[in-house]
Length: 224
Image 1: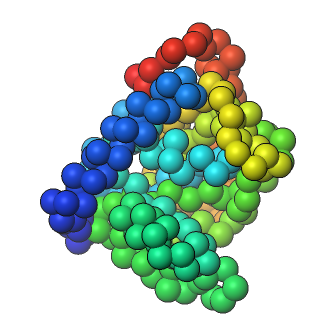
Image 2 (image 1 turned 90 degrees about the vertical axis):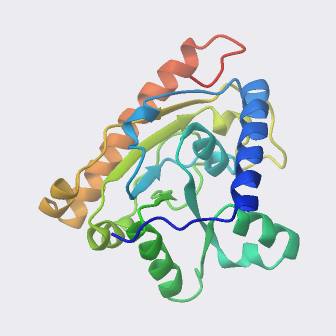
């Protein structure tokens, strides 16, 4: 496996600063807490697969995970120069949804082979009601070609904070739960339909536990 890319000192300092500030803000505004993040190993690549409740999801999952994540973003988001600089500094991978998406796929595989983690949302779009939607099998080809584990995760409360019908976010309690990894051996033993069903089952279980934790949560909970 190719070793992880070495980012510049400035980029690493920027990400550390941003993560610290955003974690503090997330705790204050959304009372964020998470469980199971030790299930993500400190080294090695893999696909992280999450439910999709709001535009906050990439940030919230990234804050909850101790590892540096790579994000997939539609190519049109790179048109505005200041925002392009920001998402490039946060390791975004451009995906051309109007074309084949081949370059985005190749870059995703390159980063996985370097031992990095790429975050995907297999529902394909944000939920309209806060519930987990059926998964799409688009991740299966990447999972098989990479030969790496899948890390299921789910969050609850982000939809209450910023549903797709609302222009700006509000306050809510957000709980995030990381599940057990799906091994490369299990991935190879399942066909695409079975693998998609297994990922959906695990994300739904993570979401159930995240929701239970959120409903139990008291104010002013910190990441732990």
